[in-house]
Amino acid sequence: MFNLRKLIVLIVLTSVLSACKMGKQVHSFFSPISENELAVINDSKFIDAISFKNSGDFEKAIELLNQIIKTKGEKAPAYFELAKIFRAKSKNEQAVEYINYAVDLNPKNKWYINYKINLTRELGLYDQCEKTYLLRQKTFPSNTDYDIELSDFYVFRKNYTKALKIHNKIEEKIGISHNINFNKFLIYKGLNNYEKSEEEIKKLISTFPGNSNYYIHFADFKFQHGEDSSALQIYDEALQFIPNNPYILNELAKYYFLDHQKEKAKSLYKEIIKNPGFELPEKRHILNKFKRLSEFDESLFGFTKSIMILASNLHPYDPSINLITADYIYDSQNYKESIYYYEKVVEVKPNDYGAWIQLVISYYNISNYREMLKKSSDALVLFPTQPSFYLYNGIARIQMQQYERAIEILEEGNDLIVSTDKKLKAQFLSSLGDVYHAFGEHQKSDDYFELSLELDSENYFVLNNYAYYLSERNVKLEKAKKMSEKSNLLNPGEASFEDTYGWILFQLGKYEEALNWLKKSELNGGNSSAVINEHIGDVYEKLGQREKALKYWKLANHIGGGSEQLLNKLKQK
Image (cartoon, rainbow, N blue to C red; front, top):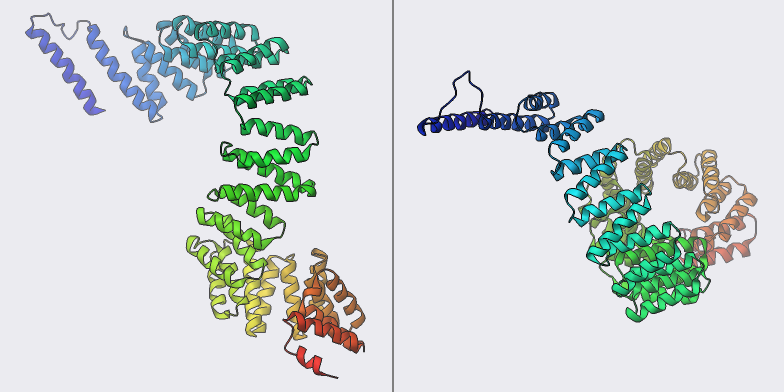
């Protein structure tokens, strides 16, 4: 700023010296300042004022702008800047006062006029706003955009007559156009003027026969008036001009679906999904719509899945469509199939954290621990600060009996957890309990489970696992019984939880009660578990029912995965 002032002073001095050389009279120190000199001084002050305003020092800016106003120089720019400053200070009355001065001094300056329009509209000073719109229209009569803005203002103020008058004037000038005639259609529609509404939309269709939106709006207009057959006829006419237009077909599909012609609708939806002219966001909208509908109508599950797979196959590199498909199939508990689509998502979009998590969990759900380990390791390279992948990597290593490495990974991930995420920390602690149990370090295992339950006492998986480990060791059975009871209350009908409770009762010598719980477990899916079948056989043996015991032991042996003692039980006579 200092250098700028020096430059201005030099300019003034140069002007003075030039005037001397040319023989012009120069005023003395006490004589009046010339207009040119005043302009230079005011320009300097104006530049400084803008600098102060931009840096937030409004008071210094106001002081300099007021100095300009008190002179005989150009004042409108100073008033304009003062209006903006006082608006920023929320002193609206003064802002309006200053912008009025600016416009009065220079009524042809579009920046001043536009600012006044916006300011008065924001403040609800609609009479002043309208007058300023009209001033601008008079000053710039050939600017159609300004006419449209004025008509929009009249629509906003619900002064439809004035709005239509301006629209008609513009139409005479430029002919039929979307901005003008579609607005007229909407206005007449809002006024319930059937004939005029129809007239305007027909103009647009006649002028732009390849635009599907106009047919859709016209058909909707007919539907709203209960003229379904006319609406369908409009769609037929549209398809003659633009065959197989997916947007028209989409409207027809929606109509047939709501009209209970579901098979017809489904056929159209498949055509629409196949159509390359139908934009991806619209396809995603259809997929998500049927995803929601199928939650309430199970009969739609097969169709919904089919259009999702169709869309995924047609767009193998679109991560969002493949993610919708993967999630839908995952939610149906078809984890093996969901893996295929999650793989496609992370291949195209490797930074999709959610897809990686679901992919890893899907492998866990089908007990493919080798792939679970591989994918969680890949994810750790991409997300080295995300604790969840350390957890799943550790769990996979436990299942693959890589206990030492599992402990390292789990402890590393545990250190990354923020203190507020108690549930996740509880999962890490319980997994460390699992691995130390597998190691045979039972005291460490128990300690980790206790710490986990301190953080999340309602975690039924932790309650069940801890209870089962205690029952296996035949220690603290009453404590185990309470934890198992709680896990079954929190998550009823879970076969493995019912097996745990039955086995604890067995260890306590309560064989009849144990059999009751183990049979519940069998009915809830435990019939495919070697461990549960072996447990049922053990109870029958204690009850003296050897034949039934052998039946369940044989079944456990056939399934595979029973205890080391199972073969010895079968050999006993």
